[in-house]
Image 1 (cartoon, rainbow, N blue to C red):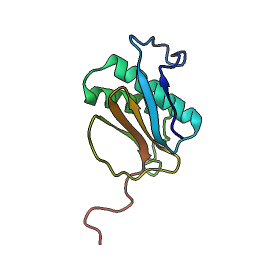
Image 2: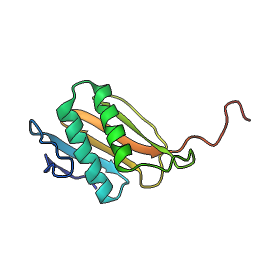
Image 3: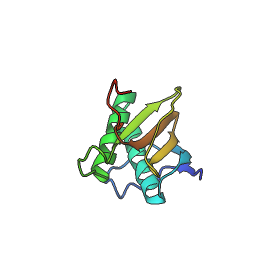
Length: 122
């Protein structure tokens, strides 16, 4: 399911990219419409921000706005990691994970529930 390209129209976000960006979907377990939204949001984030923490924050919050939860802890929340070199191992909800590359940055976005176990429980 590796898709790649250069920019896509920004009609959905209303933001005009300031420069051209390359992207490639490396791994995705999301429906295609969710993938497209994740790519669009990540392109805008990389275009607007330089700090990795700002890019990750923007992607997470824009995706939360696009796909808000009901507020129940059992539903889960989105998380985002952005960087050039890192390792990860995450647990995610079914069909709620994408790993993509935008320019030189790797972006991982996933939805995960809080653990049902309490600290210290054995």
